[in-house]
Every structure is written in structure tokens, then in C-alpha cells.
Length: 102
Image 1 (cartoon, helix red, strand yellow):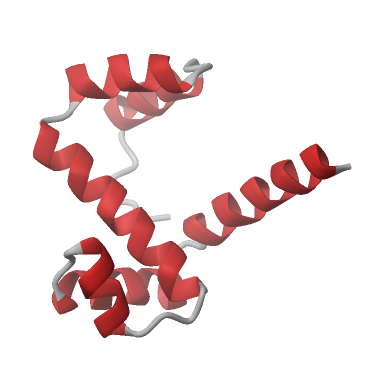
Image 2 (spheres, one colour; image 1 turned 180 degrees about the vertical axis):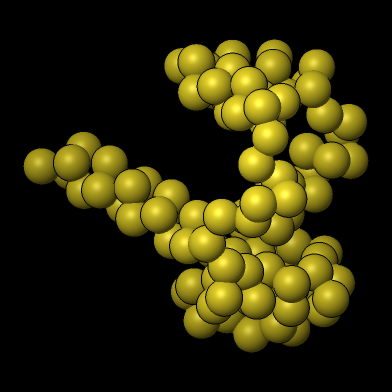
């Protein structure tokens, strides 16, 4: 964990996020907390991460998401050398999806 972001204020924000129960609640909260551009940037990085995990090329990712190669590279660095947050979420989403199919 990056000690630079570990603050009481960030803890409070994350506690607030953990109270959200639906996508509509997420929209309401994040529209209040983030600018449109910030939210679109978050979602773009997440899409880039999914595509990198699916072994898509930088060119494919750039064309589909509009992300710059710098953004794709930064996300790739996070996937390979980060805190494994993306992988944790991907695994949990897969478990939830697999549970629905049974």
C-alpha cells in the first residue's frame, strides 16, 4: 500500500464507498464527488486494465478506449508492479459471475 495516500480522510472516503449498494447509488455518490472527466478517466483506466488482462495490444486498446499509450503504459505498470487491486477486483467479479451461472 502506498503510504502517501493512507490518511484518515482517505479512510473516510473508502468507508463511504463501501456503504454503496447499487449502481444507481454509485452514480449519485460519484457524480457528487468527482468531476465528469475524473469519473471518465477512472472508468477508462479500468477498461484498459481489463483489456490488458485479456492480452489486447496497445493499438487495440487505444482504438477502443481512446486512451493514450502513456495511460495504457501506466495501467500496465500498475497491473505488473502495483498493489494487485485490479486483479483482486477481477477475481471477485469472476467469482460472482461464476456463481450466477450455477
